[in-house]
Image (cartoon, rainbow, N blue to C red; front, side, top):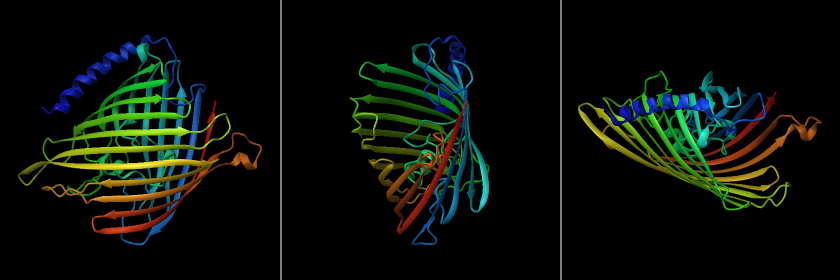
Length: 388
């Protein structure tokens, strides 16, 4: 029996015991959503238009990346509720156009028990794993028009989502820092279509299918009101569909430095800079041959809020090629520059709760193997929330 299956079985038993322990919580601390709202409903719409110098170049590596021409990237519906003082519920669905066809997907739907003794939390249902910097971030919160390369290639066209459970622990230390540990286990939410061994984007969540285990450790350290550091290490171990009884293992390391010059409630400039490394090893078998194929990916990105409601962002990415045995993937490189203007319809009306949105202009230089591409994109996003 594979290691992933053994650990998955043990963790599932621990999670069941933890669910019983959760009923005895006494404190109140919410880590997501609006803790003051009984129910919150949100709608976000993202539309992108653009193209590049090569008509045959494939742009949409992630399920919500822009395609040549005009594309509805997504209409996201979010529902959040404080079911009790200790239990929260969250559901997210997305409708989008792919190859000129309207599709829909249920991305997340889970119940979370928080405010447990000693800083523990439990959630169960369908959720995006906390792997790397972007996997758990929904489309309307992306800093760029398209997903990061390592997210789409290592974690799947529609991110790595599982149906299962997660146990997390938080510790707040005296220097205004937070330590977090997360362990989750479940079955990968996959796709019914077949995937071909060796394709760049596999359609089965980056090589994962069946049972997976996910781990994450993070430290968010507040030096003072102007400087913050965030460090995380995450790992995923699980089965894959590349013949036989094979596993995929993924490791990710992230560091983000945040600086802001806000000396009061008024606006001040800020910068968020991130460095991320990710490595994936895929076991495969084909035609009597077998092997382990490893790939490394790296990314550096920075978002500069240089004026009220104006952001400038840059991103450099590299994903290693692989031609070992039956597993093949081309080397990918990308350079991105984006300019974003955020706005609120309250600026032109008396409604303080008016919808908010953004307009984003982005340039990409992409290189896949020996082919390169220059492209430009214009994205429009509008969102609104109602709370009761």
